[in-house]
Image 1 (cartoon, rainbow, N blue to C red):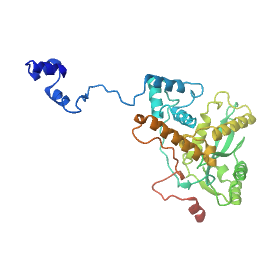
Image 2: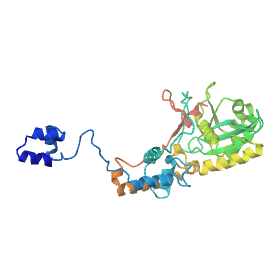
Image 3: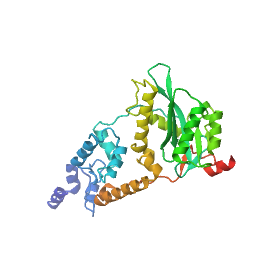
Amino acid sequence: MQLITESCTTGARKYKACDLLGVSVRTIERWEKEDGINDKRKLAKHSPINKLTGEQRRMVLEVANSKEYRDLPPCKIVPTLADQGLYIASESTFYRILRDAKQLQHRHTVSSIKHHRPDAYSANSANQVWSWDITYLPTQVQGLYFYLYMIIDVYSRKIVGWSIHDTQCSEHSASLIKQACIDEKVNKDQLILHSDNGTPMKGITMIEMLKELGVVPSFSRPSVSDDNPYSESLFKTLKYHPTFPLSVKFATIGDSRIWCKNFVIWYNEQHLHSALKFVTPQQRHSGDDHMIRSKRHVVYEMAKRQNPERWAGKTRDWTLPTVVTLNPDKKSNLMTKDKLIMVN
């Protein structure tokens, strides 16, 4: 603009000067207007105001590759840092920087599966709706398995009961549900227990035990293997755990029980559950998650006040739904616990 102004002052035509510099007359006229000095051409390179500095990017990589966090994904690193009163960057920033550094890859390719949902049941606190199932544990003898019976609370995702046996039968199921109800101090007509349609779930001994305890049974639809999503998700977490013996396998049933005991302690008390806004199932079960999530909100608000240019809107939402639904189905009416008990 300075060169064109000087040329026109000395008698040159503006369009000739513009041609020589490779810009149009219309562009120069726009730049001469108020606030027109900013280059708005499509090919212009702009640096966003909230762009991280090189030092900040190196800090993200150092934290992600540190001994404490190198085995955790960014979605767990960020909440853990927030619990310590630290905010370095958002999850998306962690992922973007790690992707640029070629440090992101998927463990397995998981194909999408179309789900068929049964009737829905809701819970607004712990020990209202439980889900349980049985999974195979491999042994060192080909064709021989141990059977893991495991119960999970739908509201809090806490494992409330488990046992391992060398057979599948309703007697083992009845003993497990009775012990879990005693441990959790479940009263009569308080609980819904959802499961598959297998013999251990619908055996006479199991059904009679449920009647004695005042537990309302709920079953998946016949010939549908994915109507029990909470238990299926739990078993996937279990078998994808780094310590799960894929190659060595379990030598004895005692070994499997020792491993499962350690897994349950880790899952309930240390595992930052993604569906619970990265608090542990035990914290959700006991109600301690409210204080933890409130503290994280305060940390984010302080970080936003210190660096407002890094937020285009509100800070991260750390709230959790007050009602959790098992197998929600928009086409059918939601059956609450009270309605289900009245029907039965």
